[in-house]
Amino acid sequence: MDNTTRLQYLSAMGIDVWVPRAVENTTPKDVPLAKIEQDSWEILHAEMLVCQQCELSQSRQQVVIGAGNQQADYMWITEAPSEEDDQQGLPFADHSAELFTEMLRAMQLSREQVYITHIVKCRPAEDRDPKTQELEACNAFLQRQIALVQPKLLIAVGRIAAHKLLQSKAPLAELRGVEHHHAGIPLIAMYHPAYLLRSLTEKSKVWQDMQRALTLFEKVK
Image (cartoon, rainbow, N blue to C red; front, side, top):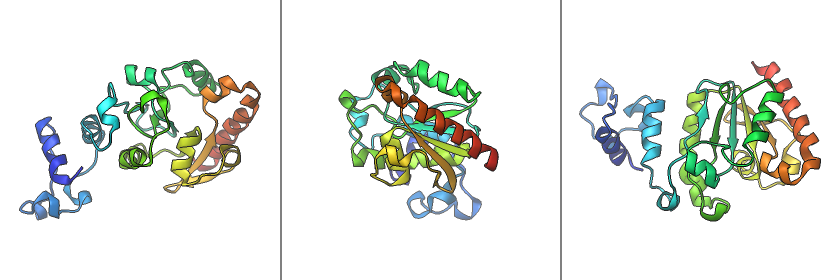
């Protein structure tokens, strides 16, 4: 979305945009984005809700922005929204919801204490993997969410999220169990709870990753 269109969207939605005095007489397209405005959740959410940068905007029921504490220490980034996520507008609203909540409880956390979002914000049809162009279209939104939350620890949940955040095609079995970094923030990759429901023997590995995340958090908090 170019800056001019972006500002028109925000103006139409009644959101004031801050422009530095030094650039008041400069057209938006000529001003670097960082100098046009100070980012905020209100601005980011408004842009996400009207986004049409990829074909997912044509089939979604709604944009699944994310949920939880916007100043959380832990930020969980998972795969594309499921059908239930798309219907309810919330991450982990499907059959994996109960297990995910139990995973948080095992770490003495709750959904209200962490921030949860998807690697793409709209559901791909038939729950297929997101295409490269769809991942790229949502990447700026995700990076802005990370910048606004400023988490101490990122947790990539599932193969697609881990591959995108780590720019890797290695099997998730190789990416888990190791400390990574994204945008200078420590990152732990782990299996998705939906996968665990199909592969119960892997639960012990996720428990190891959860303990690793807790240990790492103690080091960086």
